Image 1 (tube, rainbow, N blue to C red):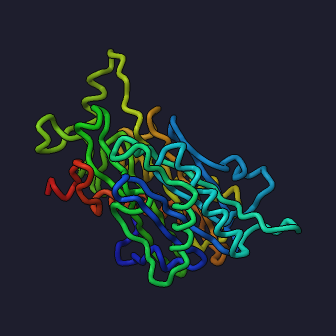
Image 2 (image 1 turned 60 degrees about the vertical axis):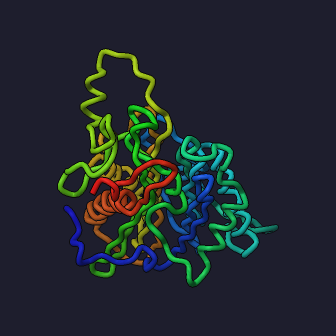
Image 3 (image 1 turned 180 degrees about the vertical axis):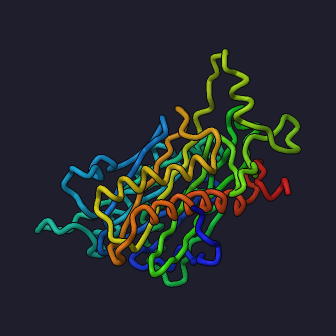
Length: 326
């Protein structure tokens, strides 16, 4: 099932969520914060072999916490996880969090992608950048931007043969409304593999040797079947699905698992040992839903968000984007 583009809405129009970003354009990194002031039921599924994540264990259905207040997507590899502390501090200072009697503790989960090789490896999403992203989420004139923003600032794709043949990517979003049900996805696309459109046509990824067009990561990778290859490790696609649906924690976890099919449609190869592919789900709990229909729509939105992140990106840091191949 692919949702009709006529049902498309802005990712900013899903009630119960605020999205803000901050970036260091010169250093080539950034943060995207997805905030639920009142708390949202959440789940996560981590498929890649090299993740950098924060507080994912508490999202297991058997664990106590039922709702969280933010998901933070960032660059900076494991260093970028510090930005979640900035989001947490901002939310605490504004009275948002789980009331423990003596204070409120915001529950903030996160994942980071590797962008240290793009510009300045010392430029990393820190606590202050996280606070700024959270602050921007609450500004009336701040809306989500696709491309070289937030966690997508230093994102790249097609890196099997190293940085010399990779392409610029970014962060993207897609959302739909169907019979009162709203669902959307935000994806920072930093994959080892190539990216494909809704028809299965490669639109970006590994450049050919003279950088005039595209090569196939799958073909080049399988051509090395009998070789020991040191796969470039600067990867990971990280996403967050947001919806106004009523879901249990177990359903959020299952939805995150199913939505990885969107990765499989959009990225090839996917979930490699050099990727840390992760999908979070946040549900505001307003609309009853047919779960399987929701999962089908969510998978489509993940695919579309990945495409948006690629086609919205601009050339940067000496790395060309899909726009330069058109």
